[in-house]
Length: 342
Image 1 (cartoon, rainbow, N blue to C red):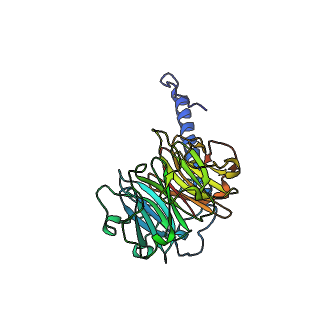
Image 2 (image 1 turned 60 degrees about the vertical axis):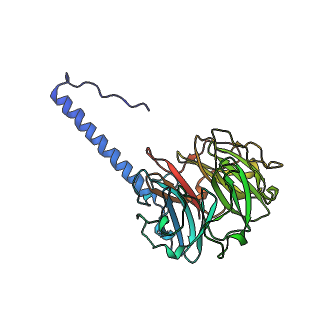
Image 3 (image 1 turned 45 degrees about the horizontal axis):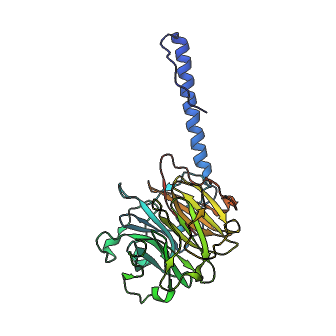
């Protein structure tokens, strides 16, 4: 409903003016009570039992922290969330990953270089904390920043995608504990800097998604050893995500505005070969990410302000057709910057 403008009350009798002002105060009070009740009812489940799984949060300028997953309470889809990574502007949270504290996190930079970092080497932090600078832990080059964070194991290959849609696969053996820190797996001359990566099983499909909400699906085995064009991207667009799928998979797609959907692969047919332009995966002006989800999975979203929300993936309606999505996080002027699943 359109907001009404307050009329001029200067000609109204003092008694009537006092009455109107009292009504205005009461309306504001009731509105505040309603909003508070909505926030309090958003948390529907208590924290899970203690777990060794940790949420890794990384900012664009390289602040990193880990926090046990059980410290994040589940909320309903569309809730406000809680403040997490505590950083000052212009920096903002840019990456999320869930990794066991006994494992390592695999980090890829915009230059395509890979790093392994033991989760246990990161100081455990509460939900709202600043974290540590990655530059103290890893040998970065000038203007290099981390753009992908993955568990150090999770499949047979890691699929890499660059800005302009160039893709390649790297065998898991090259990314093991004996990997040299900063080893390069991508040439920026091939489609620009690296933007996305994911673990793959080796026998399924890949889905690549762009910032404008377009997506393409094809057999991952069609990517040769040296790589190829995976998705043809428009000049004003760029890739933002890649995820491994099967024909019966569902992929959670989310935009900067906090609206998301689970797009069923039964409604997004696979291309015969990589290299084509994408189809609309989600109606959005700015897609943030795409993650394959299954039964029992949970979704974590973080916003530019540092607010984070955790909710069940099955709260998002699955769709075979193109949709605008449903509200997954209350933002109020904020924007979503990263997504991961558990």
